[in-house]
Amino acid sequence: KNQVEQSPQSLIILEGKNCTLQCNYTVSPFSNLRWYKQDTGRGPVSLTIMTFSENTKSNGRYTATLDADTKQSSLHITASQLSDSASYICVVSATNNAGNMLTFGGGTRLMVKP
Amino acid sequence: DVKVTQSSRYLVKRTGEKVFLECVQDMDHENMFWYRQDPGLGLRLIYFSYDVKMKEKGDIPEGYSVSREKKERFSLILESASTNQTSMYLCASMRARIARGGETQYFGPGTRLLVL
Image (cartoon, rainbow over all chains, first blue to last red; front, side, top):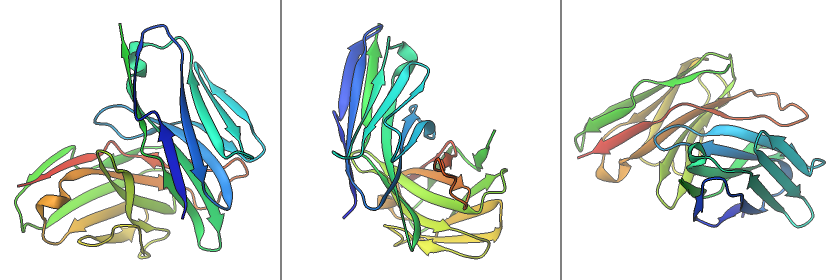
């Protein structure tokens, strides 16, 4: 069964600090991995997308890494801001004969405090 | 920019009512999806559609139906709303042809439905 597990479930950090969110997956056959940011009461917005051959990708202060051997990804946020308070969702895509199937992680709820 | 809109941000309905949730995308995407999001359960796929008049069941289709009469519009229907269908409903769209670098699902703002 395809699974995506994220940790921690929730995190509180002080403004200006860095943090790293984790995503472990057992999805096959792996196609790509995305990180989404979801503000409270709004739909998810894509931050990064990585394929098998990519092991790091940055989007401003967000840097995602992917280790396809260990099936782990991380999202590192640098110099956090209050606006980073949101849920971060890891989504892994598998492509097979049935098409493109997405498996969503449960998300990490990040709160940045002043 | 891709735009996915949903007809309502908030809805309050009574048990047994028929509920329509509308989703429209403006990027000519072939694939459209309906999810529900509940605390501790993450996003769960209800139905998806890969073409006009085509639909496929997702992980939790029971109690729901869908309609895709036009490419840009995908409707989720609760034939007889129940309290356990109180949730946040998210619509998404995506291109059918997967680019080499992968494709992204674009989400609408969500509809928070409360069934009393």
